[in-house]
Length: 94
Figure 1 (cartoon, helix red, strand yellow):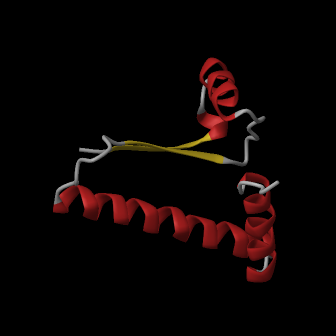
Figure 2 (spheres, rainbow, N blue to C red; figure 1 turned 90 degrees about the vertical axis):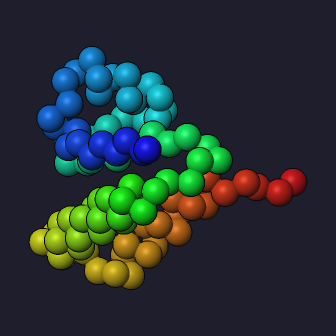
């Protein structure tokens, strides 16, 4: 069974926030959220776990849509930000 947590950074105590920043290697801002999933590799989740996970992801995506719309961020700007982030994590060939 998978464990999933979604927390607003502003609601995380300082010690937890500092620990997460160390693990992630970056500073967390109060307007961000942290999404953590614990899973066991090579174990296929049951149908109920899969439904809960899918619902959780749908809720996160709905929250993102709501927040970006409220801030006036366009889909093109979101795509550009994702592409830029992916360039930082993609393996670079020599």
